[in-house]
Image 1 (cartoon, one colour):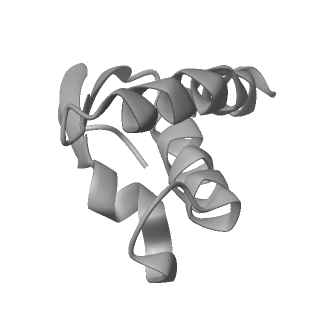
Image 2 (cartoon, one colour):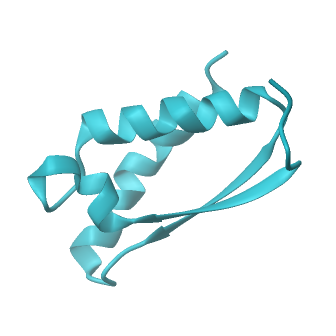
Length: 77
């Protein structure tokens, strides 16, 4: 499949990362999102990701801890 765009900006809400929990970050949801992003990257598309949080310090701290996991998943080939 050929990509329609060379670059995309993906905005993900904190709620989306919480999965069915409704709060925090859900590992399975993050893994699923990462796998789908990796498919796009493997097609040669440059992906920028913006994560929207409520601005609470705890949410930002948790996201920072999970950020490395997401980037590692994206780099797997």
